[in-house]
Image 1 (cartoon, rainbow, N blue to C red):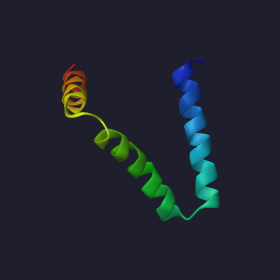
Image 2: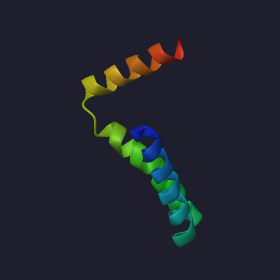
Image 3: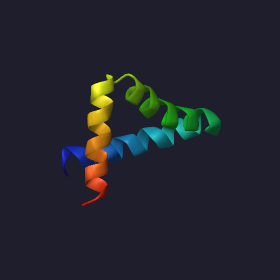
Image 4: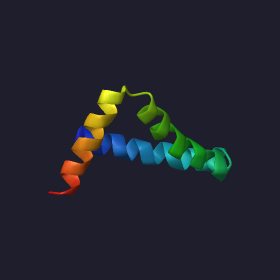
Length: 60
């Protein structure tokens, strides 16, 4: 199993545990909030680069 696969399996496991321990609305807030905070913590040039890479991969 690749390291990305291990991270994905670990993320699913943590998500399921969070769903059991905390209310569903709080888990949804965490799932949506963490990537949003990570995106907005990037520098403006890094955000531009990320958008450019994402668009290029969509148009493959």
